[in-house]
Length: 155
Image (cartoon, rainbow, N blue to C red; front, side, top):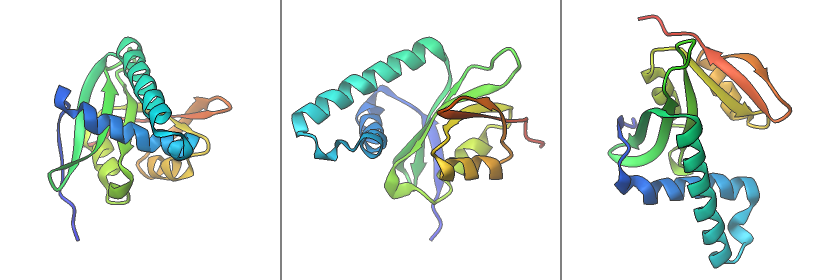
């Protein structure tokens, strides 16, 4: 079965979807499923709001898109404005678990033809495999993250 992948500009009305998407990532990272619902929701709301505020301040958005699979919101890609070197930073690329392994992340990254930079957790081996397959190469990092770069794609 082929999935039709489309992109649209993120809107204020996407906030509930984005909070749910963020929760799936944080749940997997911190095991929040065992937390009492009230505390879990409070933490997720605070973390989501803090992350969004931080990203707005540190990485002025160049592109904020919702990734749709067959017309249903399935993920998000957030790119920064181009830096001094002309490359954009992939600030956020997230796909909901039920839509993974359908090529959505690949489509989102290949849609942008210019140079890209991103950081990926050293523990995120599936992500590293995707990025390597798409032409990203390491240029540095720290104990937690690997920094990757992809040159502009040829036409």
